[in-house]
Length: 508
Image 1 (tube, rainbow, N blue to C red):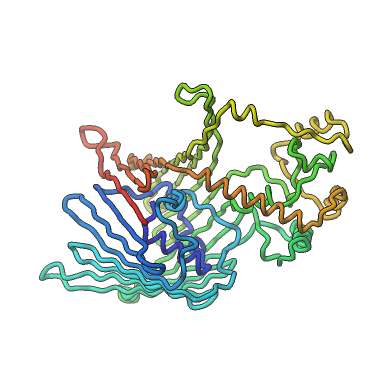
Image 2 (tube, rainbow, N blue to C red):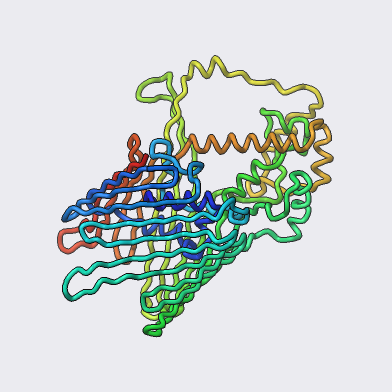
């Protein structure tokens, strides 16, 4: 589960137009969240508060073998009220770390109103470890991040040490670069990430021209259904002359583009244009090209040539509605909810030692239930009638719609074909688009209302024979996270619990 200070940092990025995902550091975020998720250790309670419009504080107390804790402060020059919410109104989807829905464009391309800054500090007790961070937005595409860690003198043989790490980050719509220097071992680093929208030019010219005419937007605002990201990182420790290198690539479908393709354009029917806008008909949406599946999926491949390790991951997300006609013996009350499932796998191989491992994981998500009174629904249910003007053979319409292949759910339509089949519309196109945008906003509000309220994650390694289980949910105004790590091999007595705990978080 996302920590409070990380949540505030994401709010800062959103307010200044900086992308959290547009960096090589987070290219493997989805498999890490699903297969290598952290397990709480002992009993932990965290209480956080928004002191003023620009200041935030948090206190953490945990009990493992002794009482420990930490105290954190954060100050931001940017106004975060648009994105910050208390735990009472904060959707749990904002703090759940699972499948990352990647958008097809990054918000930093818009010019931020001001170049904000963020200051963060944290002290651990009783050890008195210190850590801090400074984030300064330099310009539209540049940002400076400074992190430090201070280790106090623990005994007579150790000396206090302070480590500073500097990040100069650059982001554009299709790339990201990080220049890094750390005082530990005089470490120099470089990260780069490039994005390739999988949409060929000959298939987009007509569509982009059509959209630009309708919405008066540049072609850079066109969204794409999938994205290929590739990058690398280079490290060199000057003190001991030690190099480091890794290369990774990620293919992902963009969930916002799928909503755009399915909801962003007008509907028409090739059989009868007049029936296309009626609620009782199944009009065909005019979208750029065919899609065989709308399930979000992510595939990654990472290579470390120096260590000889290869790893590939795959994750797919799906959700479905479930309903029942009898709630706890009450035949007059029906209920409906949403269940989400994320399946993930990871395969590792080392060319030097020939060691391999297969890790499997799954995440189950459940939404809150919606209840309905059957008698009220029957009384208020009124079916609108289809106008009888301009009708053609309805049996032919049903036959054609029922024989659409599942691999050709949607198809391309030209500008001329759209105009020819929609000449009956008397309203201007701009009003039509405004109506569609209003519907899309309503859909987004519905998605927020039907948010997931709990998550169960399970992952296990076939070679190491270990199992990780974590449950995250919301109890009144508290976020709750619990889990356990189990060694299935054991030593003589069967499975052995290596780590377990529970964590409570609240913020106002």
